[in-house]
Length: 308
Image (tube, rainbow, N blue to C red; front, side, top):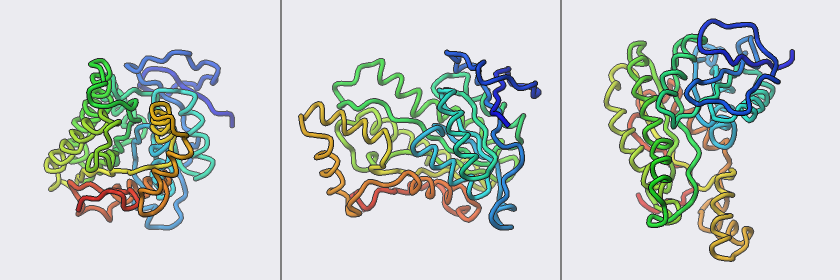
């Protein structure tokens, strides 16, 4: 069956429209829903997965770590909604995820940095597919820059993207999870929070604040079965890492290849991480097995972080 898209406002499912109706510019204030690639539930590999299958919302799910987290969650039997700002990339990602995992995956065009997007996204997901059990708060990093080089406008945008947007979603999702007696919130942070990198100022500052917020959130509904944890990736083979190394190459005049090799040499594992390795950490923290892990930061960096 040819993929379809419904760009109506949240509400009862209407007759799907052709993909050719995707608008060139989609307002983040009114999330647009891309219809499911698979209408039948995934068939988990075992009975335990079937019992543990839940609904998950994954931010930044069209590429990189978000995509890998969505894939791992699907393989563990979850039903997954991926979000992002670009309709075509989301549609393509949903098709690949559904094809590769056989799971139930949906896509929702949504900009976490917009003030009204959190409530609209959460209401849309729950009205169509039931209670949200797992929330993966993941967003792409802001452009590289040193602490004194970043202008006010960039700080404000990064603040909305990396801190305030995720907090809006968490503020709405956690009480609902607590009311049902189960919830998993996983925030994708960065190993640079513990070992700062000077040219990633906005990411270091705001993800540090996000990590502190996660610690406070973790205390709110722990007795009701809701956990909140962070995964802090180190160097990971994504477009984000290429963007960072490209920026360093332009500033230093050193080739990308040499910077890549030098960066990898500073990691005890001798390489950058793979996105699926980060996704596996997210999926574990989202599982019932991680029910007594709360308020912590799981660093996944090949041993690079030097602090204890």
